[in-house]
Image (cartoon, rainbow, N blue to C red; front, side, top):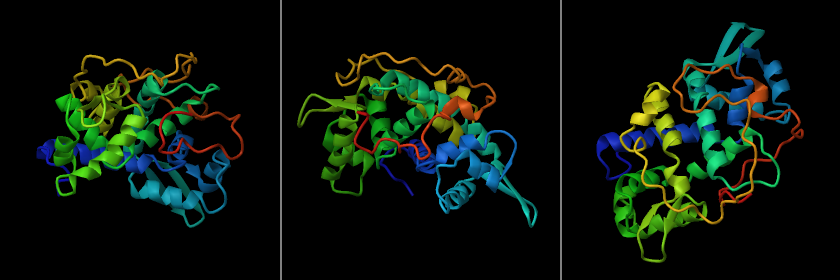
Length: 280
């Protein structure tokens, strides 16, 4: 069933990326996927790697990741069960440094250096707003669109005024710009910079190599760079040193736990930012 008034192939592309974001964004999911990098683990071994999760929290997370096709449960015997990545889970890992690269360039700078895993969680939080992917897709392809026209495309079976809550949030998050009430909307520099992220997610959803992200029919063609949003801090922060080069399309990197989340984190690390925007 179509979710937008866009052509069927574009509508399906948006739906797949939206579904993928819904799989990986929930709290702790990316951390669990990274903890499973390497040989399959028994439940107790995995629990030791994500020790901040309380009793009863890990099992439903694992079940959801298994249901999503990202994690595989293998029962060797009744008392020997292991968990590891599926092929789809392994193929997802190279998308993560692409997200970190975007976050380093566009998210507001924090008062302290952030582990790459927090950069990923913060970025995903911004993209999972309802209708966000469809709005970003339309603005990327059409450059400037009025709110009413955008509503007819993004939510054709809904009252057109319903487009404004997600639009206002995307403006507050720094992904969309407008000159004022009643004027057209367009992508900001940060929104346009999402091309490698959304292109890579689209390629992963379609089972294609990440090198295909650069040929994405929408996100593979950068616009002229808009003026940067004033809320983006100019404070510098060193980029993660251990992340693989983003967007290369190479085979899955050899991930290690130290690559994306800090072992110096407290026993119960803070959640990713709420859906209020990239201001930390």
